[in-house]
Amino acid sequence: MTQLNPALWQDRPGLPRLLTVLGAAEGDTRIVGGAVRDWLLNLPVSDIDIATRLLPDAVMARLAAAGIKSIPTGLQHGTVTAVVDGRPHEITTLRRDIETHGRHATVAFTDDWQADAARRDFTINALYADPVSGSVTDYFTGLADLSTRTVRFIGDARTRIAEDHLRILRFFRFSARFSDHLEPAGLLACAERANDLMALSRERIRDELLKLLALPAPAPTIAAMLAHGILAPILPEITGTAALEALIAAEAAATVSPGPIRRLAALLPEKPAIAADIAVRLKLSNAEKARLTEAADRTPVPADPRALAYAIGADAALDRLLLTNDPRAPHWAGPLRDWPRPRLPISGKDLIAMGLPPGPAVSRKLAEVESRWIAAGFPASQPATLAIAREILGIR
Picture 1 (cartoon, rainbow, N blue to C red):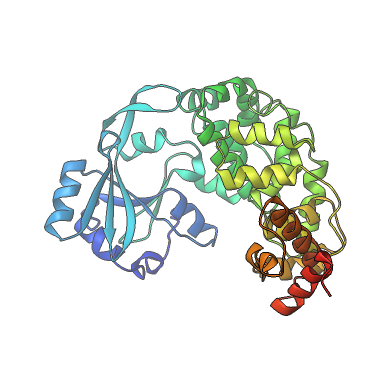
Picture 2 (picture 1 turned 120 degrees about the vertical axis):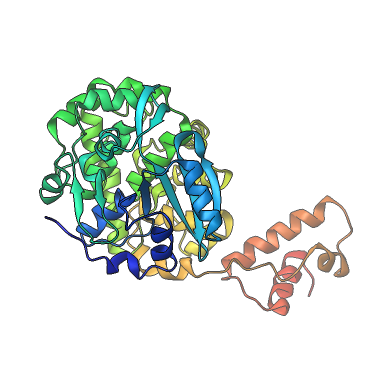
């Protein structure tokens, strides 16, 4: 029998108390999903999800009696969030599907652990750990698949996808994270059901895509998705991965962390208008939209990259260095990351005080001063900047 060391969770602040309150010793509650999977792979674990035979009302009653704050996150689907020692933990009552709708399901509560496991997506995500003994229960070859790093749908892949279309993108993301291959039956089902992605909200597509792009080496998986027509229904503008592969190499050479927006830009045509349209389609934030649009412009970076950083932001300037495969990227990655955008030491009032009449000419001359100030390397000294202004105004 496979076992985990209970010390893995017993050392977590407040968690042993929470598990006791939820009847772990009586077999009512187990740790489930990603935490179990990642512990078995010796990977860091952040969130710990809890499955229980207790009904949501009973969960909340027990938490209240123990003085633990509870939040009814999704009572209709059996989920309660417990906040203990300042840390949130999701607690979900065992469920079985009554009806599925491509994204949301109508569920019934159950006390059958295997029925709960059967409605999960992949075998490696349907592992349960007993909080007391650490023994791992596996209903669907999850341990075997974990040993071969195989991401496999539970049961029939087409059925799992019909229940929740997002599982198409999750199949590729989890494969990119945990595996060096794509399980054939799952890949075939995803290819056959790719058009189902059009029924998903743009936000969910965005979140999965950016999570995939944030992984260390997503290019082979993206290439497979393109080869099998997965992205065509939602992002037909993506046609190849050569620029992404070059960018990943440039990030590694510059010791720069993966940038999902930067990597998305590498997959798109070098046209700001297209990037802006896709940003709207994926409902990116205003800051992400601006960064993606700037990254679509591959104009060479000036001699002093800080000049570009001053205009479009340090992150966007670093994106440009990396996306254009500029050999200066390794040198400038650190300085740009830590560079605070300076402020021009003078204002239009200073120009007026020097004799320039108020009016439109003030902003034009100030822009000239700023341009020369940037070219001079952003001198922080006000006298030095005033000297630039005097020269532009012809004052000796």
